[in-house]
Length: 274
Ligand code: PXL
Image (tube, rainbow, N blue to C red; front, side):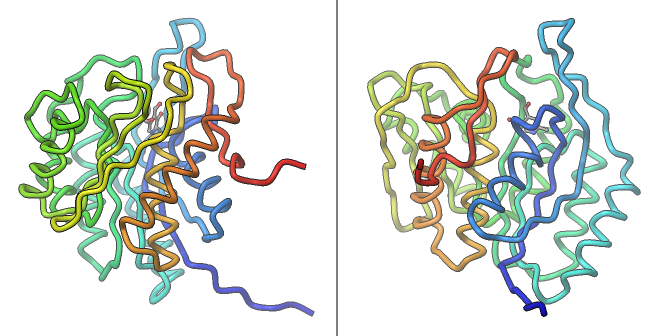
């Protein structure tokens, strides 16, 4: 005997990060942990180089191969798929394919993690991709989750304290029309890891004590994926942001040790320990 399940379907359009710390792997673990069904379309493949300071070796997935993945997923879950997370894109062509796929159906929730660079990379390495992300994907998003650096880029402001983080969130909302979860994380001084949520009417400061001062892999991807999963289950954007922050905080507390310069957050952090 069998039974049919109808978990909320969530899609991530993201890069593979082979070690599993970030990217689609982190997204899928987050979806599973939070009770949604996860599908993934890969935009690029990242393989860190252990012989070169763990530098990112990036291989782009050909645009037609991404198109095929999205075609398969959208056809398989017609009528069930209304929530998507966008992670690392990797090229202008990829962004164009994704924008077309997004425009080919109705969505309830489009969560954009505006991945401009990864930890340890040079800022501004791919200016044309950053510009395409701002002009083609940001206007389609319903929620965006910039980190400190990305919030500075999207708002055009420098952010050194909580008031400036709030101003940046307002500015991104005003220009892009998408709800914003702007992450101060460990980047702002003080004992608290502070993020700001703003949806045009409500501004909320989400704050928890910092867990050390060292970044971990997967926190940004998992936060956006957790927002995505909670939205797919019917929560409001603010509720989703609050739950996602709890999820990531627990995951940072319980990390997976790695040889890379950053430990990895564990998506099982909220499970009760036995
Ligand atoms: O954390 C940003 C990120 C997103 N997606 C992929 C990555 C990284 C950082 O390494 O590799 C695929």
